[in-house]
Length: 219
Image (cartoon, rainbow, N blue to C red; front, side, top):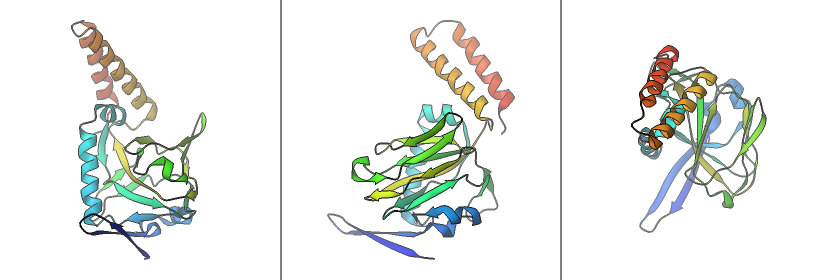
């Protein structure tokens, strides 16, 4: 294992974070294409920051509606610098939760951007789907999630470092198309009720939503 020590100067003290060679956390195939550093998932920093992310997501209705999360793998943190990249891959279908006998089916992957996009170049997340290749580079605090059935990669760094949080999720609704339909329906219901909160169609449409969720959910 290669340990990378990163020291940040603060006004009152020196904060030290430990990053490790990400290959130690990868399977055989992923290790061939991974080239970045990862904050040790056992570190107090990773646990504290990860908990803050999960608390914020629990109160975000758009995230809940779109992802319909059943199980969320604890958020991890990675860093790319000096030409590092992550080659084209698909993540493991089942992810083991550290130090437990439990695993989760990985339906969705999320990337939360933590670096100012003006301070680095390259390192775009590139996701391939039916409609082609999509490059993603978002402001600090913005997040993307996408189906893990999609091929994806992280382009090489050409300037500066980029830090992000990433995590995997098992959704209550495994099928991407069904999950998208439910999100579109829920969004339409919210708009309808905002404009006409007392209209009886709101109750009917909400009933349709929950009956579809009842039919498709796997909990």
